[in-house]
Image 1 (tube, rainbow, N blue to C red):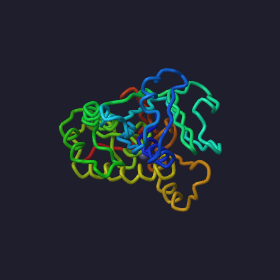
Image 2 (image 1 turned 120 degrees about the vertical axis):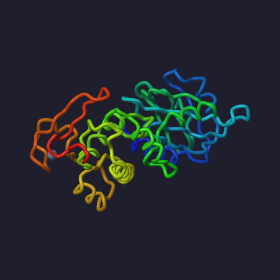
Image 3 (image 1 turned 90 degrees about the vertical axis):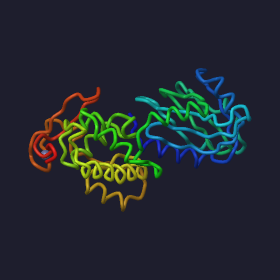
Amino acid sequence: MPEGHTIHALARRLDAAYADGVVAATSPQGRFTEGAALVDGSVWLGAEAFGKHLLVGLDLPRELAGTRLHVHLGLFGRFSVRQHRRKARPAPDDLPVRGQVRLRLVNDTHVGDLRGPTACTLVDADEVAALLARLGPDPLREDADPEAGWRTISRSRRSIGALLMDQSVVAGVGNVYRAEVLHRARLDPFTPGRDLPREVYDELWSDLVRLMAVGVEVGSIVTREDDLERTLYWEGRGRFRASYEVYRRAGQACRRCGERIRSAEMVARTLTWCPGCQVAPS
Ligand SMILES: [Zn+2]
């Protein structure tokens, strides 16, 4: 599943392609025909990410004021945006369609195709408020309130490994950041939230803020110090290849302590951790 950095990068790409201009919209697949008809011909006001949710403001008719386009990619969704290189703005149907395109957005320069999302709907102002109320603070947002995450975590018997995956506790963290950030903090993923010292939470939060911002910049999850240093000299060509300390390394030796990395199901996803150097807080 794409983690929050992917959605923040997507919001930037969409804004670079569409901001302040009129978009044409269709649903080639037919599953978002009515919604696309409302989006069609509106001015793109701006895309924003909240955790793994994308919300797009559009200049819609007065009776739809405050309504936004809501997209959640889920496990398999993809939103590709590319230049179409036509001289005049093509009608959306003039460009070839590959696969099941739920929503197509076209302007003078770009075509964006959304495939396989969990959610692609128009949501009114009340629904936006309800959606945002369900989300914990997002380390990638400047308006995030880390206290809100701490309030939940510090009262919970659930493990920190489960809490980090709960979007209502911290928004945007997925399986890879969970595993890696807990290893960086030398923290046992099974530690109950209420046993977590405040300074360990603060360290986890600021580490997520730092790592996820790098993730937005380079388009990959980067968590190892030598990889992080490499991003400073990376010129943005091709895919940034990062390696991990524990994610997908079950059975291999921990580079820090030599112990064998273990795996277990936690919140329906495979958690990997090192039982040698990830310990309960003292
Ligand atoms: Zn270790």
